[in-house]
Image (cartoon, rainbow, N blue to C red; front, side):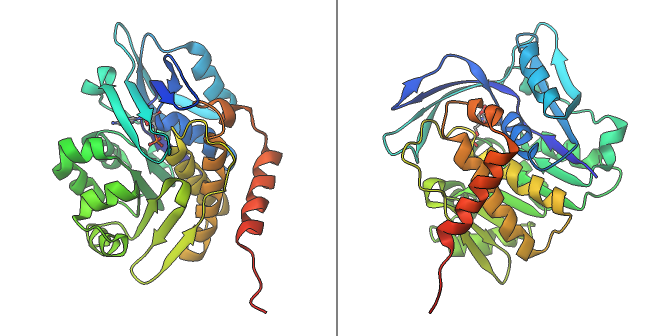
Length: 305
Ligand code: AMP
């Protein structure tokens, strides 16, 4: 059993009311790998970086049992770069700059052994690249989860819709759900999106938790109320990593188990935001994760009598 993760491995520059960073290591796939490593024993990574990407960051991924055979290192080219600024309430952010660099001509090549991965996380990336990965799988994975963002909807909505036809679960935030569906109500948006291909839809609402929909049911998990959120970057990807990592670990893709997966994803996101970049995810231990999941259980537990 294994999990294939595709997405950006990047440099980020982040500004929040708590401070500002120069280029630090980030990227959707980096957060997904770090987060899912608390659940999954073998993670197969497919991505691309430039010659400027630090060897130490690749070593950090290897230490978390990430197989980097599918990580291309392009000589003479630069790593994908994103910079963003958060507003006082931390729920909204402005993208200041996106430099595609190595992503511009990225042709994902799956090592033979990755092509039979049972769980596939198509992290935030160009939709045509997500589709190219799908096309290389020799066996349909048991579960395909896709994450995307407004940037790709603005540029490549048609390509995105083609990829969506083939996925099981779509994870997006509330604004992206509105953009994709053309509906303001999230319940109406879910109905429209579930007709585009995915059987399940997760709408992430930042500090207001996450909603899981299928055709008939809806489930809600809160975000952990935290005294301070330092940097929300990567929260969505950490959520996705916890979600799919938990499903891979438990091998159960029923709606009921997806509810548990949503709570595990929310727990991972709650760690991510406590420090800048990947710092917190890189330093926590399994015991911290177990304790945090119990905190979530206590948060929503109540007695009707
Ligand atoms: P999140 O906060 O979970 O939405 O993800 C933040 C991560 O997404 C950052 O580390 C960025 O490097 C990465 N990112 C930003 N813009 C894009 C994009 N257009 N495509 C793929 N990854 C991106």
